Amino acid sequence: MVAVAGCSGSLRAPSPPAVAQFDPVGVYELVLSWEGGVQDGRMDIRGAPGSYGGVIKAGSLDVSIQEVEASQGQLTVRGQGAAGAVVFRLAVDGAFLSGEWVAGGMRGGVTATRTEGG
Image 1: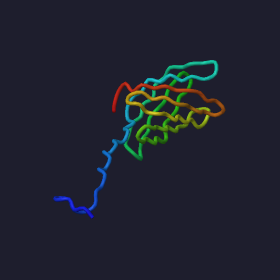
Image 2: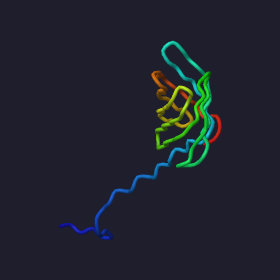
Image 3: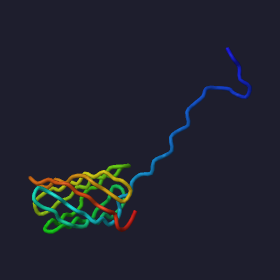
Image 4: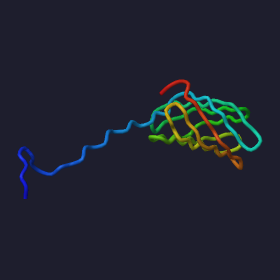
């Protein structure tokens, strides 16, 4: 057994730094794409954790946001439009988001850039 002066107890690795939670509140410029089409739009998320709301508007798509789940690196937005449920699943990279959307029988890609908030 080797004794080291000034050292007692067990050695522990330092705790990793806390990762800040992604705050989804803000205004985003959107580009929705699907087979045969592309549409610019806007997403406005308001509120606080547990009570987010807002709207998504892109062409004839007009969605009332009902639920937002935000975590580090991911954002899921669920809402209701004229055609039924709409879901956006996005990866977050700073002010840029990308992923997919699903509405009724349609689906496609989405990119978004935060222009206000955050």
